[in-house]
Image 1 (cartoon, helix red, strand yellow):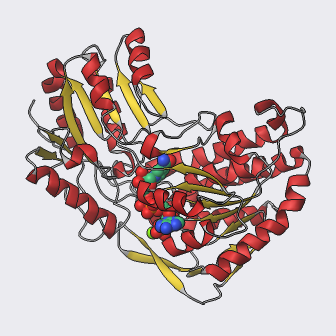
Image 2: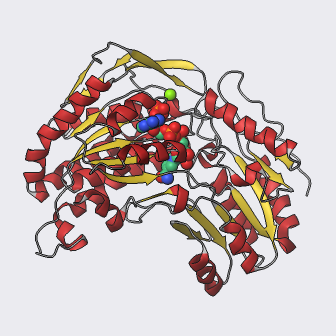
Image 3: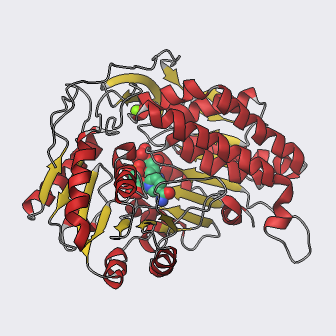
Length: 483
Ligand code: NAP
Ligand code: MG
């Protein structure tokens, strides 16, 4: 297949950048914004331009303590509130997210670097959906998880929640909505590079008159997260992030009475059988690895193709990759935006160099002119990958796909499970029985068939093995927030 570019190009379709961003953001503690006790601030930037967006307060141990004290104080009133009243707050938050959707999407794109098409159509609607879904559970907890006495199950208490930068608002919603629905109070620590939408959510919490202290947001870097999860008066720790930090948190929490859930990294297989609808499968490969610049914990980063169709799949994939538009995340035509930080870009580039030096063949989007400032990585895939290669084993968290082949369904299963992770998997086949048979044997928390990266607030999400434990979303997700 030849790789000719069409003789025309799209006209730019930029979304307006008109969104108010205060030059400084405080901590959200006990229902109000305030400066950090230390007075320290850090900058958050737009990774597509490297321009600073705002200065944000850096919480130290004393600030974290204030937030935990506020959450403890608020717990008594919040857990006693009739469930239907709790539900009304969650509904109001969901409605307000919808009403402020454009503002949240633009802000997220500017702070994170991901395309506006994704923040507008995925991140923000899914965040609202999560609050809507959990509003419905508030008065039905006894049916979701019946207790031996028939009484309502009880909340755990004060929840420390630490989230990463890849889906900042969505991860805040995934954490806060079930915690509140179950009657817990929260102290949330957003990632250092993407604090702005969580703080905008705090404004929404003020607008809907959520009782003071029910949700507190402490911004800062890893040290703030460490202070939070190690605080003695926290009852539960919920963490989403890297496996290394997850391990450190598990060690810190071991031997205490704190409950723990961990949503960690992945290296998920996307398996294409010869009887799959190939064109749809190629679209599925694209959305599995190049959505959000591949900075997705459940990304289908290991492509396993049945050997007899590998040439066809690679030709079509190369052609499709060539059509991806890389650049200004605020342009509505952009498919692939900026990498979230210079550090993350350097990490990804290191993996690409390792792939080349270990002998795999590198294929990337060519031709596109990338902006002169910002953090950019061309979507790419590697062929000739061996299971022992670094790019086949380690989570890259970038737009880099490792392609491998298999000959039999048994070999596909062995290759798919040949990882320390177990977050997600994709299976592409026209045979329903084959799909079930393969899915049954794959060790992953989420398995998609003839699709990839589909999320729903009602569907539990979470991992096995080094991808963590505990589920978020749906009925299973409630269990993590009830005593
Ligand atoms: P990370 O470095 O582990 O950071 C995650 C969060 O933890 C951030 O808020 C971070 O703060 C904070 N943190 C860092 N060190 C800490 C410590 N010692 N104690 C407590 N908190 C600490 O991960 P990341 O690079 O931001 O995110 C990428 C990783 O997250 C990938 O491995 C990805 O697979 C995983 N992830 C998993 C899921 C899932 O649901 N399974 C979802 C999304 C992402 P700073 O950012 O301010 O340093
Ligand atoms: Mg930023």
